[in-house]
Length: 215
Image (cartoon, rainbow, N blue to C red; front, side, top):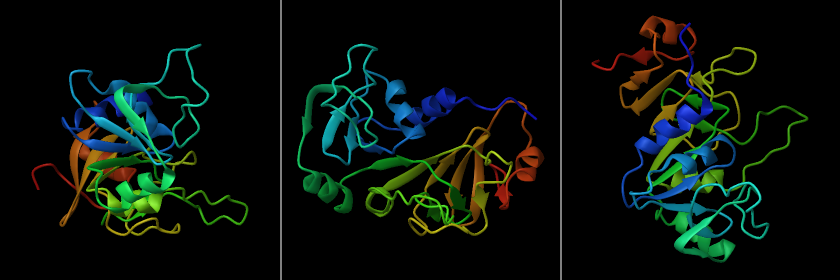
């Protein structure tokens, strides 16, 4: 098996695909790392559903402001011109189609772009939907950033989600520690793979059919 992308490499790769002037929400967990890799020369507006717009990278150790946090309760910075506002206004942005991209984590993504990221269905699991449903349907593009497999080796990319859905057909692109995949009308098309990985290797650990880049 090839070398897998690290979480920081995944974050840097997602950051490459965020264009100048975009309004972007970074989901709780792994997606928050993307903020640290957005180039300073690009003007990109980061939104958090608890009512922030214009977030910067994570604060340096010792410089955290406990009153300035993102939706995951992590300390953040605010760039010049940034603003904070009412929770209801924040959700109006999300539901009104004013976000260009949201980057979310996931438990499962189907080959047609269905997203399951709020509940595993386990009896003892704590449901944690937050603003995920609003983001999945409201954002113009949904990027998913996740490990390719579970800790027990099961594919998180599937033909049909078995966990409760967050949104149907909402995912545009998937970034994992093994590959970047586009969700297309024809199916999942491989955009990039980790160094040393072949399409056959990737298909062997993916529970949904994959299309080669030129298919």
